[in-house]
Image (cartoon, rainbow, N blue to C red; front, side, top):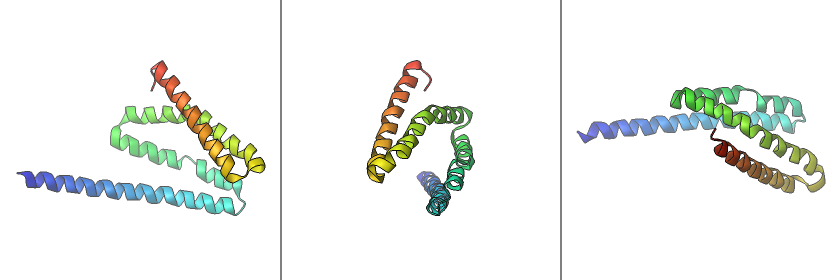
Length: 130
C-alpha cells in the first residue's frame, strides 16, 4: 500500500526538479543575453531585454499554474509595491558608481533597496494589504 505513495512522491520530486531546472535555464539565458548586450555598450537594448515583460509574464503564468488567481494578483501587487525601492536602488548605482566605484555603489544600492523594501513590507502589513 505504501509503494504507490512513494512512487508518486518520487515522481513529484522529479517533476519539481525538472521545473526548477527549466526556470533556472530560462532565467540564466535572459541574464546572459542582458550581460552580453550591456558589455557591448548597448545599454538601452540590454535594459529593454531585462525589463521586457516576458520574465513577469512567465512568472505570472507559473505562479498562476501553481497557486491560482489570488496568489498571482498578490504577486502583481507586490511587484508594484517594490518598484519604488528598486528605482532608488538603480538611482544609487547611476549616481554613486562614478564617484565610489562599482562595489561600494552596489553595496549601498542593495542595502538601500533592502531597507526601503523592509519599510514597504512593514507599511503594507500594517495597512493589512500584504
